[in-house]
Image (tube, rainbow, N blue to C red; front, side, top):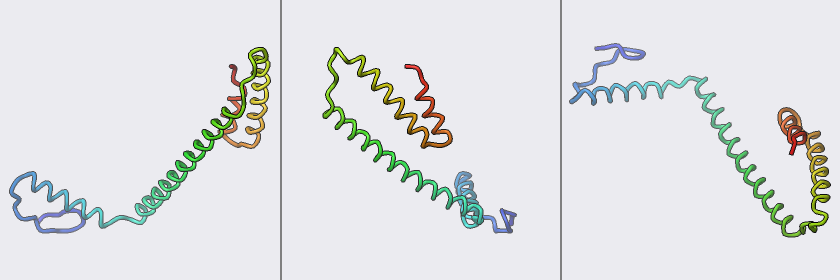
Length: 126
């Protein structure tokens, strides 16, 4: 007899090879561990499952947002003509000002790190 894990067990019948003996010992050890999951391990596993579900939902929402933005950009590019070449620079300067004003308005409604990141976009030099 030999001591293994939590109690005394009989030694397995003589294995045909060393690798078979090691395989049997590992299978026994793994089956013992799987049967004795603690409450803490079960809570951690449940939390990880919950986080995984939340990440999948977030990924789906991100894909939907990208598709909506793409559809809007296509519609905008189809429906809004480019300004004539003689006023292009003036239109570009005005558009840049409106864009920065838009970003400032959005940043006011955001909090935390996202607000700082968006503020960095407004203040960048182009």
